[in-house]
Amino acid sequence: TSVKPETTISGVEVTLNSVFPVADILDVTLTGAEWCDSIMPPDTSGFYSYYEDKEGEHYFVVHGTITSNASDSIDIRWCSDASALVNGKYNFSATMEFEDLDGCGFGEEIRPLQTRAFILYASISDEVYSISETVQVKFELPNTEELFHYYYDEDNQNTQYRITFSDMK
Image (tube, rainbow, N blue to C red; front, side, top):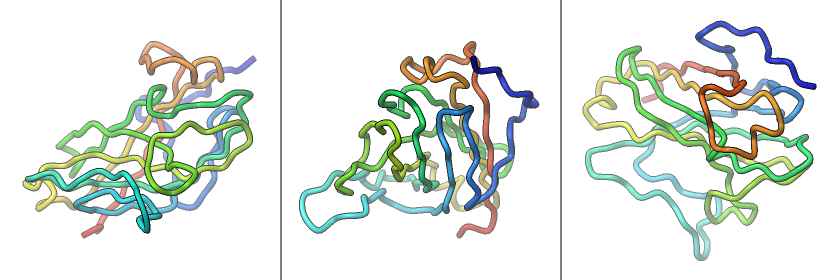
């Protein structure tokens, strides 16, 4: 039986390169962040898929790894909710996705006991990018393994995690 951890409304503060558990289901490590025009996979030597440059926007991308202790596969895109808050004022929705095992794209599931790279990204308008000083990234994940197999629901037992980046340009 999983018990919802005690958290404040603002969530659990996490730091780069430190493993933090999500219940007993995932071990997450955030390894870095960057601003970019396009989101490219690690392997671009052959056929690959990527997120193209959008006119008038930049991507803010957080990189990390997740190890799954779950008993079944998990698709992080549907069971999570994420956002990027720039300068404490401008809010943008964000998405979490696993890198494909072959390194040529994004969107695959993680299987039990695998460790996979992931990205959390938000598309930010050029106007906000040009004045950005800080970016606080927040993401919510379920507290029970069963909820990882459903679409995100704010009424479920979730925990919010957050990290703030500054001086990124």
